[in-house]
Image (cartoon, rainbow, N blue to C red; front, side, top):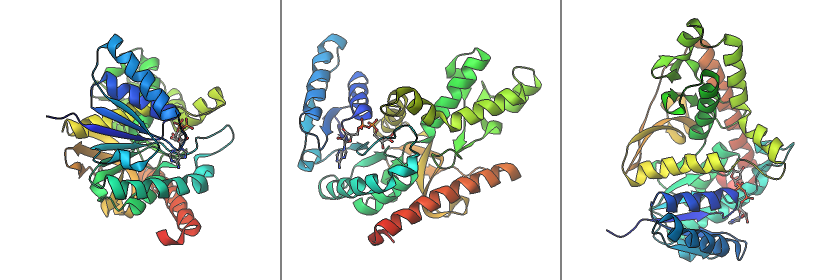
Length: 320
Ligand code: APR
C-alpha cells in the first residue's frame, strides 16, 4: 500500500513540529505548504536529513502552490498569525479569517476528500469558516482544542498527585477560550473521579479549582513566557493523535471541535465535544448529561463561540 500523504498548511512553529512528528511516527509522506518561500522547503529538507539518524522513511516536500497538496489524505491547518502577549485568541479573528478563505479554496480545488484538522485560532470560529469556504463534509473536518486542553489539565493533575500522566484522564468541553469547561466529575486517576480524590485527601478543592483555572488560561501562560509566539509542541502532538486515529482507524474517543447538528441543543456550530475519530472521519458525537453548574458553564462557552461566528459573518457577509 502506498504511503499516506499528509499536507501541512502553515510551516511555522506548529507546522514544523507536526512535520517532524509525522516522520518519527511514520504516518506518511509530508507536504509542507506556506506562503513564505524557502521556509517549508528548508524545514522539509532539515527534517528529511534527520531521518537517517532516527531511522524513519518519509518523503518531505516544501510547497508554495496549492496544486502540491493534491490527493492529500490528511491536512492539518496552522496557517495564520499566532497570539502575541496581550492579544486574545479573538483578536486574531479578522486576519485569520482571510487566511481560512485562501486555505479553504485551496482544499476545495485540490483535496476535497481529505480529513482536515484545523488548529488556527480563534479555533472554533476558524474551523467553522474553513468548513464553509472548503465545502468539506462536516464529518471530514474538526478543530484541535480539547485534546490539548485536556492534556494540559492531565499534566497539572499528574504533577499534583505525583502519578504517571498515562493514568490521568481529563474531560474538557466547550470552546477553546478562557471559558472552556473542564469537567472534574468525568476526569479521573485510573478511573477514580477527581471529586472522590478530594474526599480521599489526595488534594483539596482549592487546589483543584486552581488547576482548572490554570488549564483555562494554559495557552496564555505559554504566550507570556515565550513572548514571541504561542505554544507549539503540545498543540502539534495533539493534532497528530487525531490524525493517527483517522489514518489507522483507531476510533479513539477524543475531545475535538466538531460540527453539531442538534447535539447539546446546538446547530451549525463547531464546539468542543467528545467524538469518535475513525476512517470515516467523525464517526460519532458523544452526548453526556450535565449537572446544573456544568450546563451553565457550557452555555457560557457556547455563547462566546457564537459571538465569534457572528463576528465572522459581519466581516464576510458571504458566510451569513
Ligand atoms: N497561507 C499559508 N500560510 C500562511 C498564510 C497563508 N495565507 N498566512 C500565514 N501563513 C503562515 C506563516 O508564514 C507562518 O509560517 O503560517 C505560519 C504560522 O506559523 P507561526 O507564526 O509560527 O504560528 P504557529 O505557532 O505555528 O501557530 C499557528 O495555530 O495555535 C494557533 O494561534 C495559533 O493561529 C495560530 C496558528
